[in-house]
Image 1 (cartoon, rainbow, N blue to C red):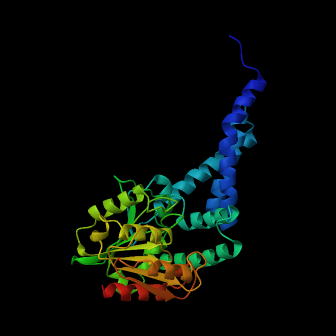
Image 2: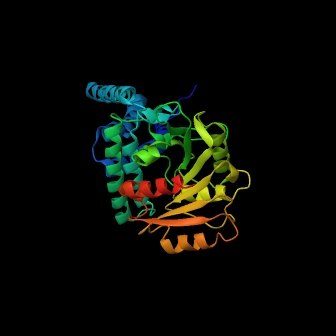
Length: 349
């Protein structure tokens, strides 16, 4: 039996490790760019080194004592880090669906800041917009941490299907029936501070809020997105008063909310629909009352466009337009104004 040549073995080895090394190295770079050298960055940084070093040493058939100790220390450190994160993770005030194990290990806030660095690199966020988002998000996570000590489940890693909905949910204390909000996240995925921010005002904290996770794109207007909305409504907690159920969408979720408002099957299941910092008039006239809650300086869904969306609703249910201070990230940066406007409009429906 002939043995393969060293060149062939190294070629196969290189092919096996090149892709995961490249992926983990890029992930590490964006993680550090967004967070600095936090413990998660250090743990993630050992992965590409291990993928690169360990297989090559194994092919050579021997490990030097120093290298063995280094790899063993990295392995012990990573296992300890994963165990600590797993034990420290708490659901807190927001009940979470069964989450993939990584959602208990990788902190949500760190993922968000790494994601904003990636979004800037891909041209989806300008440096200025990324800076404003990071500042607003840090304030939102700080307020969340004050309410729920310890890292929670990473909602960004949740994913729903038409048959199984992964979600975060807020239920007010007590057993009495309560009005409900189904909340649709925007581009980038579901974030826990969405629910935390919405429940900071007592008037909104009295609503049950169910926030399903669709995925990174937040394309709620798709057939999959509408199927998830349908499934959420079918499986709401028993305390939710179905006659006082509202749909609230943010950004891409606002576009999806307008699609639901025009849907002859789904629209009647909601008392009203709210589009936060977003909207679209291409789905047809809304069949239930709608609110366009716009930010004064939103560079993604500007006021002129949202006025056109409101005016295009002729022939359908009433569409109101309210304006709050701030930009596209007003839910985090101008939480009091957004909540007050939202709660006031819902109370009159």
